[in-house]
Structure formats: structure tokens, C-alpha cells
Amino acid sequence: MLYYLFEYLEKMNVPGAGVFQYITFRAGMAVIVALLTGTIFGKLAIGMLQRQQIGEVVRDLGLEGQYAKKGTPTMGGVIIIGSILIPVLLFTKLDNIYIILMIVSTLWLGAIGFIDDYIKVFKKDKEGLAGRFKIAGQIGIGLIVAITLFSSGDVVVREKIAGETVIVQLDNGEQVERPATQEVKSTVTNVPFLKNHQFDYSSVLWFLGDQAKKWGWLIFAAAVIFIITAVSNGANITDGLDGLATGTSAIIGVTLGIFAYLSSNVIYADYLNIMYIPHSEELVVFMAAFIGATVGFLWYNSFPAQVFMGDTGSLTLGGIIAVFAILLRIELLIPILCGVFLVENLSVMIQVSWFKYTKKKYGEGRRVFKMAPLHHHYQKIGYTESKIVTRFWIIGIILAVLTIVTLKVR
Image (cartoon, rainbow, N blue to C red; front, side):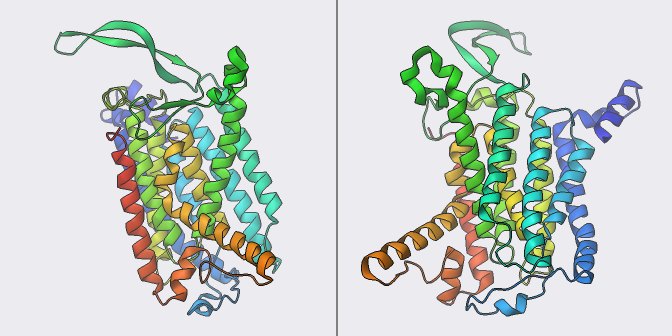
């Protein structure tokens, strides 16, 4: 909203109004406003949640200190969502297709998580929303994202035209020859660690010949649904210790913000030989708000937590990360960047699968980990909660650096 106000003021020749045209300025303002919103609104929200007796329902997992968390306000994800959306509404171009998709994704997944938390807290049902309904909701937002990317004329990528070049005049007057480019709709995505690092989802349907491009969007849509479901559930599973999911998401957010800035800048994209995505610069502002919101929430969510995000927050954080990566065409980097989420997910899958297999084969279920997800395994062997969270953050930072390194290591 403020963007359009200052755009009008600039046309009226008001001094300083043009500063809102700079992505870096708006991103910086988004971080500050999100931080302030998270800390100020967070304190008020915690008080309200306490008055309404919206507290955490603790299941007996046999973990040290778990009952001390009973009654801690939950559903704090509303703080994160509010802290993201307020600066986004203030500082972004609201008619930008990428911003529209991110807002819809945030509200959609937040609603699913809110319903789940509502059932747990107010209906006293520890299981919450049935898994099939969660999956249906995740599939729904996946379809919305995929169909929008397929149908919107504003969603294009800039690709090089094989064998064609153009003469470009630099600022110093020098003329240089550059590959010719065109903006096209495409199902192409970036592939890490490879020099010619692009993969076209339609190539999976190579056996269809000329029809592969037409039907390639089905493969792309399936990939989008799978990624959103996997990452949002991964964040949900990771949210088991104070500050774990919040801090990990903030680290991931910084990395995604860097990629958004590079992918939306034609000069940096050309230099790094990555896909230039027109109109995606507004995503930098959105991710700045995301970072500010998660850090602001961490003020109250760090050990010992004064509030839990609940599924309202964890599903939203994971969904935002997944959709953001898809929009930037870097979704194949998710296994590295979101390695903490991936390992937590895998630990549950391995534990459940091995237990069922051994029970069927030996008549008695056996476990790989003392408890899944993985962070509870380390609690069982005696690590303190704060140590586990700090070490997971360190691993998250290492994975984030490795993700950034993929820009040059090919």
C-alpha cells in the first residue's frame, strides 16, 4: 500500500519519494516492520492466548521436562503470519503475480494449520485434523500454484536462443556480443552442480515426441504438489523443540532471499549463469518479511518457549519455503537447503517402516532410533534441548552455505 502511495508522491515530485523504487530499501523496511510486529504483537498475542487458555496439549512421550510445557500458549503461528503479511501489504507491489501466489499460499496453509490446532485445543482431540484432509489441502494449494504458473502470462523465464547473438552497448560506450534471449513460458528448472544446469520436466515425457511440451505441465504440477506436501510436513515434524523450526526456517529464508535477489537481477543472473526470472524482484521483499517474522517470533519461542507456533505456524513456514523455491526454479536444491527438514522426515519414515517390517517378520516391532523424529532421539540419549537446537541450527547454516556455493561449483 505504501508502495503505491510513494509512487504517487514521486509523480508529484515529492523529494525522497523515489526511495521506494529500490528493492533493497523496501526489503530492509520489511525486515524492520516484521521484527517490530513480531515482538510487539507477539507479546499482546501471548497475553490473549493465555487469557483464552489456549495452551499446549502434552502427550506422554517419556521425555524429560515435557510436562513443564503443558499449558504454554500455542497457535502462535498467527503471530508469524501477521508479521509476514503486514510488511508485505505495505511494501510490495500487490498486483505482482508472485506476491499474490505467496500471500494465497501463506493464508491457505495457515488456515489448514489453524483448523488442526483448533481441533486439538478446543475439541480436546490430540490427533487434530485428519491426515487425509491435511493432504487434500496441500494438494489444493499445489494445484493452485501449478495452474497459475502454467496459465499466467506474467510468469516467464528468460532463455538463451541457441546460435543467435545480439550486440549490446555498455555504459562506457563499448559494444560487446551477447547471446540473444527471449522470455518464454517454460517447465525448465535449475539443476545444482552441473554446468549446463537446467532440467525440463517435459523431458520426462520424451516418448510423446512433439506433444511432450504440451503435457509436461502435468509432470510439473505433480512435482509442485509433492514438494509443497513434503516440505510443509517436514517443517511440521521439525517443530518439536523450542526454537528449532523457527530458527531453521530463518536460516533457510536468508538463503532464499539471496537467490531471489540474484535471480531477479539480469546482470547477476547472467554473470552466474542462472535463470533470470522477470518480475520476481518483489519476492526479495516478501522473504525479507519472512526473515523478520521468524526472528521476531524466535524472541518468544527460544528456550524456554513462551509460545508455540503450532501447526498454524509450522505448516505455513514449510509451505512458504516450498512455494518460494518453486517460483525461483530452485526446488531441486531443497534436499540440501532443507536438509534438517528432510532428515527429520526420513527418521520418521525409517522408524515406522522398520517397526512394521520387524513386527511382521519377527512378531515384535524393533526401532532404529530411540524415538522419532530425530530430535527426540537425541533427547532420549541425554542431550539437553538447547544443545540439540543449537547444533541443528549449525547444521542448517552449513547446508545454507553449501546451497549458496552451488552458484559457482558446477
